[in-house]
Length: 241
Image (cartoon, one colour):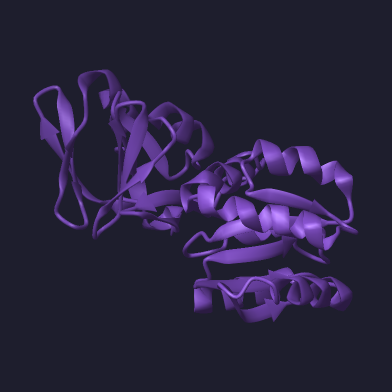
């Protein structure tokens, strides 16, 4: 059994999906929303396996909703605007239903679920979040077998992990599918600083700075210690008044 939520600002759209769902007893409807704000609340509350998500809604698009979710479900987008089709497929949505669609087309979308894992929508959320002009408040990270959003203000430091990155908060580490240089470009430089070719630190997480030869050691608020490489020492020195 899979928990399902429907998000569509039009009642007729929600009604149609509920009608088509009747042929799929393994999909259990647990809630619905007619706007992005309510969608965020209900999805975070019920943590469904699947969300049928309208894209164009007043105030907040379906793409915007994704960056506010604590845990990412599988997404099937639906919309009356075909201009979103290319973007939806490029960012690895399970499927894209262009309104009006038939029951047969709906069934094709549902049939794809058996071959899809939640990890395939991670590029969807990350591409949307990281493509914005402003610095993101949250990013998508891997937590065990799940994918969750992490507030950037909670990050203590980031460490290179091969072609990926490992992101740490006060409690644990998370895997990001982005390289450390890519993350450096996207995070607010007022708070995040490269202190080593393989480490970025959140300056707000630093409790004190100690001299270490010709460089420094940063002591974080959680008592972890990070060595600043000599090639980045001047960046720390500039902060010392």
